[in-house]
Length: 75
Length: 385
Image 1: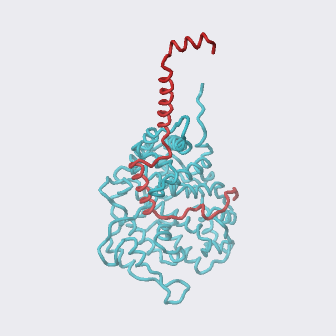
Image 2: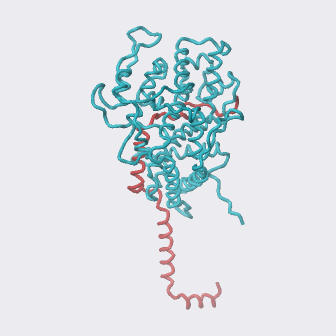
Image 3: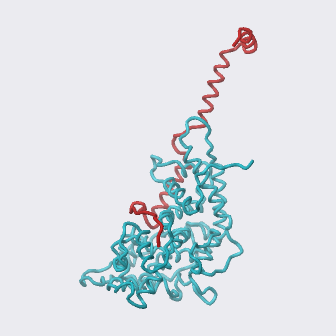
């Protein structure tokens, strides 16, 4: 940056501290958009509980994948 | 329903195969009578139907006695009253307990039937009943053969909840195909000539597949980005909730006042019988057909080879997806995910407390739905210029 540009910038944005704080604030706000991993909301926890109850009352609890085997095509 | 008798309730398939068909039919009736029944409108997963089954006092005599095993000492008995008590949730002859029996969503029957196992077993029965080309049957297998033919390859007895043939609809296969078309807008993938002719309904969920594709894509966005700490997070919980609501509405519309529930119940019972056989490597009919293998689809392939009819090459995916997809669709019909705040449960893997939840099922569904559809549900969208 030239001396002249530095001078202009300093004149235009004399409050360098505010710029730094604003940048910091934006970073913090952005990280707020990505709050994971975090605990599930009460509604999501209730959805998990209902699903587990559904699974308990439905017939079966043995994943077929536990039995192994391949999916090769044949007659 | 038969896998329900086996896995949670502890009855072996061999014992079920030993029972007289009238007892099995009575167990199905009892299960229907004991279905989950809350104050929800008929058709809701918690109140599938208000149509009454056979009165319980007519079922009690049939289910009240222990039955000797076929080829064991007389003292070896099959405890039918115990199984009945578990279904009823109470003591024999006591007051009925709270209704608690559920059956799978019709998608379970659709996925299992797509493996073509019904036609494979029909041809096996044909071979056994008309000659000795396949092999000579053991006594245990002959009992299984009799039960299977009585329950699933002839018209069900009158006044049963399974009675779904008449002058109006003569074919059970066509009844199932009609139900699949109405709920999912899909037909079976049977080979040419093996597909049942059925009445195509005017009101059908023809956009089910499209909406479900979209739902899975959005769930995958959530799954692949749930732990993002930096950068964009394209997960759209509101859109997932809207798509879940759309599915709940379209499925609920076809089930108004409990329609299709009887068809769903008996279709699930039918397919679960054959599914249970393929899961049991030691079952006499598997042994007699020399179809021992390490997995259900491998046993099916071996039987298919013997009867000269092609099972579906993607049978493994159909077997794997059937139950997780059934559970997910029931939960969607319960409108659990219509609230965006509940949606993270669909893609957040293994929440520590409480454990379980739907995320493990959605992972399985994403994998096998993509294989079955031939379209990758995880693929990025490409916008047309």
